[in-house]
Image (cartoon, rainbow, N blue to C red; front, side, top):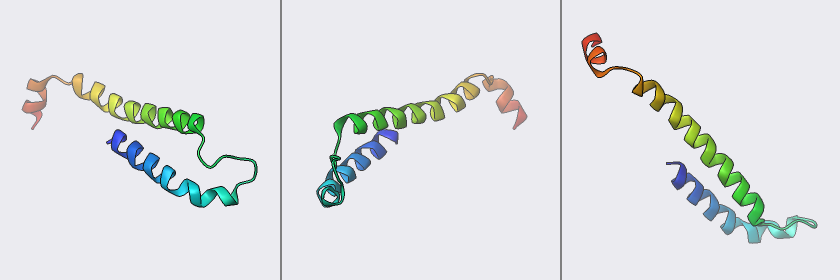
Length: 69
């Protein structure tokens, strides 16, 4: 899901950069370093958001979970 969001966001950034470049002064509309850094941040947050619940679910014994229901 995070990968899909990154691909859609990157596509949106590439599609809108020609329209934004006249509004920018001494700044590129598409900077590969910034895009890579933000992509790594978003991927890291997505990994952390999925890792924490997975660790919690892995710590529960299946038999105990079935007995409580």
